[in-house]
Image (cartoon, rainbow, N blue to C red):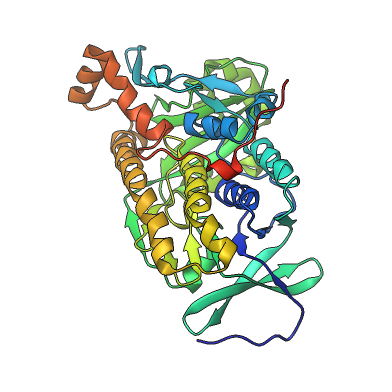
Length: 417
């Protein structure tokens, strides 16, 4: 398929990134610091959005250090989480992963608004001559020259525009237009749950944790923020309408029963504020075609359980910049180099998929049938008998199997606070 007509003004770049989430912004910032002329297209006019992951893992905190941005990030209101745990039906807190055992400068994860995190990275990009972030601009289609992608068409507030580059990076999420147009097939992984996402305004203090909690057949995850709690209720897949038919009082009662500290705050909860997240777990069998590379959720959609989607997306962005910056500066990116990115990221992606599969196997029966969330007895025995083993899951979720560091050209000294 060939599409090379120049009917209107065309912008030329070294790299076009479709999507301004963690993968796209990180890749764009690092590539710009490497001397690559890059444009990031974000279809929304700001970063404030439902279903933004709020957990920033130790490897991302280390990256912020390497980029000279950690001190600025530390000024953002956030909470620290040092353990991954479950509250058993006996009321005990079972530690499944201990981040404090990691040998890193920041052995914890933070709960911080993702929009603040993205704004921080976007602001850092403003200092780079080659960084162009266009908000309110959405890729509508790819431009092809035979079987090679050579650019994108995009909808802007002023109308349609064409942008061309030796490489298009698809960081446009689990419903990626670029990936679908390139006909990259997906391998679907099992998930039998969906998530209701809503907030409850409160002054109550809940534990700083991302652990699911089950009570009376209801399963929730509560993420504390300043002045409110972000809530996720896990429901059987495809059952949104049936659960809404039970009425808002049913949801309010389920929240109050599971989190008694919120009992006085649920009265203002309305179904209009409850958003449905269709939980998908999948992976592109191949992440690229000539001139196009998928990263982040466009390459591997992760479940919100475990909170590792942001971490993987950031690591994908780092690997993309480190492995491709030199080729992009010369304007000659081959499929061999794109394949290197996928191979580099595959081991960590598979390891996280395996862990998330175990989490789903543990939680899905409770969502469907009620009862208590119980880790498999042999695993629980190992982790409680040999606490040092709690570093294993946190190493995979918090750092990744293959460590991704900022390349030398992207590193900066932190400003003094």
